[in-house]
Length: 387
Image (cartoon, rainbow, N blue to C red; front, side, top):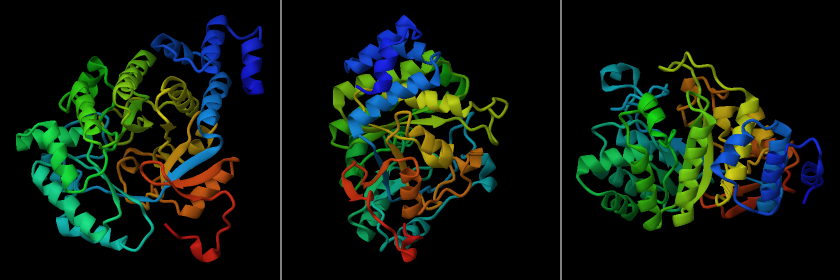
């Protein structure tokens, strides 16, 4: 037990209900939804002590990143999510893009000899890009880079693909797996509460469908990530309900790699009238996520969305992963006014970012196998721009 946690447990100034939660953390006991809601009213330093205690108990001071790129085939989308600044409806096609298969494969060829370990493929839900199209595309990507890990398609995309192809989730995912898909990202979860979902993304897949798709993927041996969109019209009780549904599924399957809270950004979307939450609130969400999500090994802060400085701060509030190099290959958050308008960091920059807050940088692959330990690595000037 750290001195800070010991102080909290023995301080007369700590409210008894918060002291009870801290004791659960010290005893490695699961906290309840009600505990989680209460934590939103706790002071940030208190949350930091609990979250960092769990983080260091699980991972010491290790902080993970990977070398990855994003491919976004299109931002044309049949759905109309109110918080989305990225996608464009078919009637607004002039404002969107639609990459051809050759353009996508050419992008992969650009990285054929680069030491990236993952390609992340997500985009809008385009009616012309179906299950067979993407299965064929993944197969061709693997022909270019047989060693690359393909993490592809949100549950929203997969639900649409399967419905259009008239196959079950299991059949659709099996086809993609046979063609080379390795895992699923966590996007499209937003908030599971049905009343909130009705207001912000009522035409996309339901909460139960999202969970069903990920459970099916886990049964097929395809791990996945999980996300949560916070900082819009939801309340703490909705966030805790969301995390609880994920925690329950993780109890059942153990198939989630990491949990990623995603901050609502209000640039150029139908919810622009809603002010963004503060950095203090960001850190509270990360900390409470780490405290509550006891069966998730990893909590990730997606640095292109919250910015480098907040990502560094988050490493003291439960976060042990800050994603990857990206190489300016994603527009999903930059179009919404995120901190990073040109989201790319070299390996050296990521390592320095982690070391500058006294953490231990570890390059990982998608499944958190160690690729390289950078604790004692000194970069040469020629390596500065290395992916």
